[in-house]
Image 1: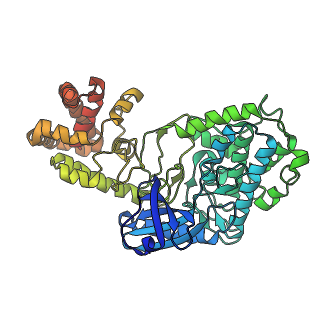
Image 2: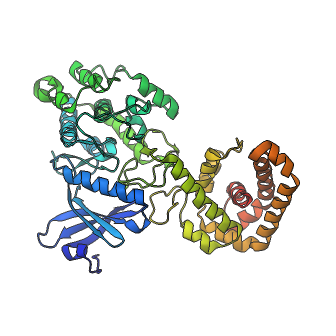
Length: 511
């Protein structure tokens, strides 16, 4: 279906079906009218972007315009109009490299060498142009087409930065956990070597189908990375050539000054003498492991907590948006904890921004004003849908945000099973509960809270927010226990789901 709006963009391009979407953008296939050439158009709703996001968008477009290489997804056009910005990229139809590998009938060490060579060619071009990608990972490695032997294309420059020569500086904490370099984790000055570390992680996965660093606990994962604690266990590594292991060791060198560069890696015997050095043996075990690795990446369950309100272009989030997923997901349940892009620039300001919006949300709930509520949060959104189109705070897990950022140390725990049940309750439920209980109940509850606060004023002064918060939690629990069965009946959800939802609802009212 084509667009009928007459704008500069649609005068030059014909829009077709949607290919993907993110928080503030949608990607659609398009065709340049004058040539008949097909492209992918990322259409960004700039009305919803902050000034900082506009700067990041301009940075991404500027960097993409610099990069013209057969192994990089190329930006062909950038058109800005009132309310929207259009980025016209290569139409890449081959899907992810890692998905293609597991579909092959034959995959060898030599194939892995050819793949990493193309990735290194792209990285070398970036570094020659003064660009550091900062988010190299499987999700950003695409194939130009579904044809056999299609070129590998590096995508997603939303976190990329520009550097001067071999400049090392602190550019912020950005990347994807399992692919972060030791210097980034230590918050030391960094530069181009961070991309080579990520290449080492990718090469390791290409050879055996699982990552060199892995732990369910992110802190322990980071400790592994900083210590460079990886190995080549038997039996899977027994059939890998010493030259391949040597290249990995040189890429995963802790000291960035001693780490191999892209130019040096391309001259490594395992790359430039592939036909005589790399093994041609089919690696069936690698393919099987890679299938499981891909499944963990694709089927992970997300419980979202917004660390910063916006991002700039694909990442861990491989879904398409301004940065493919405008909201980095920092808290997730997954068999691969290291698969989400994170960025900590201006974290305090971002948290304050979230707190402000959260207060507006709570005020709307306290006032029983569902119309005001829907202006802040999409009523059709669950906490498992961070990439859906809509408002500023989509995908925010307000409960987790409060528990992470409040002064008091709270001891309320929700089990995984109950959390899964609760996450399925859409925000539309608030409207149903408002209509069910009425504003009167809300008002009475608020009065009770204020009376309690007044009576305990001296205690609150001595013990800060901890005592008051504990009592608020208690009131929430009492009301939740009293009303969960009614909520269960009204909303047609299991009682155990109603317990969690009821607590959440009254807890927000208490705040």
